[in-house]
Image 1: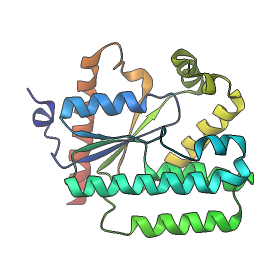
Image 2 (image 1 turned 120 degrees about the vertical axis):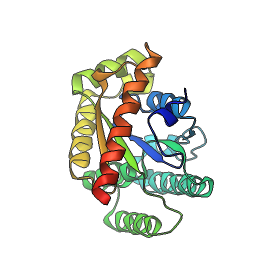
Image 3 (image 1 turned 30 degrees about the vertical axis):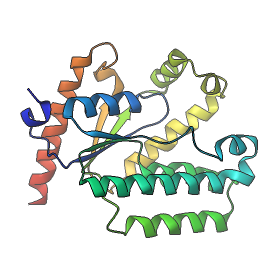
Image 4 (image 1 turned 90 degrees about the vertical axis):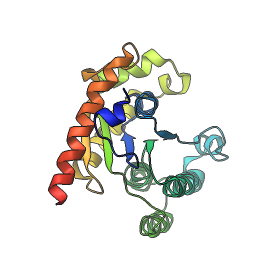
Length: 222
């Protein structure tokens, strides 16, 4: 039986997956999209012309990188709007502005003028009709130790060579961000409560929670 019909997930729903590196956003995105017969929306990293330049010189390229990400995410938002929903989205546009751009500004790798320009551009984008706010943002959370363990397990050299202090800061920034986030309803899932990689069927309890949460939020709107 189609799990979307079984749990009465709207066919036009837009669900965004958020969380720091290592929590399994892409895995969750693919699993939910397959189970619900939804399309996926992934971050385009391989075609990013600024990524290598950025890692070589944060100060010079942080603004360019963030504007590129913002533009690409807005294109994806427009695509979701044109299809009429039915998407699982890997990482949200809100993380770009609420975590990464903010971090560059606070650490001095993005100037105040550039940061103000970036946030003004973001604000203008989210006010357009092409910007469908998600029906639900699923925040994947876990302890710092759990996340570090997962980063080691998946073995990406760039991540393993990154100082632990960076992951500590990102973990804190994500927690601070989600605790004040209110652009759409948020469902928090602990990464220890399911194991989609080893047990594909474990996605069904997640969908059941999504269904229950969406029904509750709809009732609150009435």
